[in-house]
Length: 530
Image (cartoon, rainbow, N blue to C red; front, side):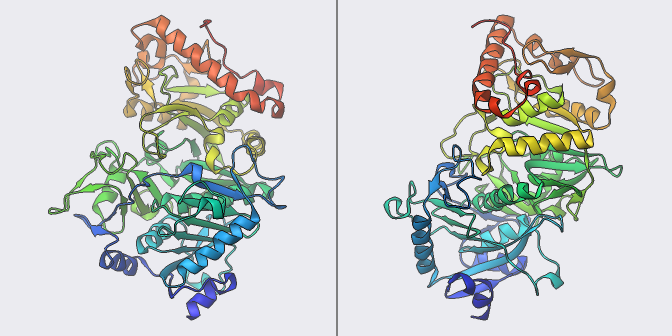
């Protein structure tokens, strides 16, 4: 029981046993032996998460106390009382008393000045493997003096009681910033654990003037780093995994005085309809030992995967260490960014494939966070739905968006960063009639932005949204650069553009008191009255 005392004893948690810092091979072996997982052709682990195949956003609660009363954005974060959390924690401890659990001591963040030492306790071996992939593993010499500053306990077999615990259902994600702890119960979806670390860093880092970001980052040997903002399904992971550039990370980063740094040590990529042609680096991870595949359909006899089959989930996922990507940075760090890209999956089909933003427009679109929620990223979402998620990560932002927005704007100005809005959504019509933006065109436009050549082309001002859109770009069909020209009915396009413009304005009303006149002026203007 020495491991228990060392890791969990100070919290009063006394499970039957603790498998401390087990490596990948032992966790693999245990996952298969216990029936938690199966092995697919090539060696990846295949697991099923049951009814929860995405985040349970409505089941996440933050403890409202003296620590959080004036620092948490309560309009966006459901509250739980300290007393309710305490009861929940006691029930968690009782539930764990007869269980063999797994514990990993890991770092959230590659910046040595700003990383968060985290202890993650899991009921499942594959959950322990998952988070070992997703966070950063200490060097051998760092375990001896590992001083954990945050604890996450994930127990899928626990069933919450709404009346007793102040939650909504049998599923609960309870965040306590004062006690530096997250309790996860009633869901097997592994993404809840990784998002809990992101939530913690989103809360603690701004107080240190470090910007936490839901984004991917890549760079080149010339150190021209690029930030990619975007929610799940917008292409953030896909577009940052570029063989010609060095991947820093695919999902969560910080921006400090030292440059950009990955929060994680791995990737959590969407698997549905993944192809070797479009995403060769990511596709290769589905054929290798170590990868954890969530809700990917597998033939029981041949052990062959069917990545196109959404029977188990539209939000099928793969977790793998970043070392699986050939051109990834193992340090997880790079210099200051040269370009910032905001990705949106525009379901209305009216956004151009790329647009150049002024700093004020960048702030407007960052605070707006327009995209479409893609099927499967959350429970109940079965088709793309237009939405605004502030800072491109609203569900994980404990603080008011203005804190993140002001900090980002300050950093953009300080380091003279070029800002772009890229639509990976629909063209030639809205969702249902048009089609997704060709990924080859998106990559060509991004490459032009990143190498600087896009700054030299002719631009036009979009009549509705006010940003600058390139008229022509070598290697890209000019028609696609003008969304209206791709529609069969120009009037129908105008109507949709006006509708979306009104949605932007309506959504932004809550931020107007927090921004200056330049940002307010960046609002879109409806071309026609509908």
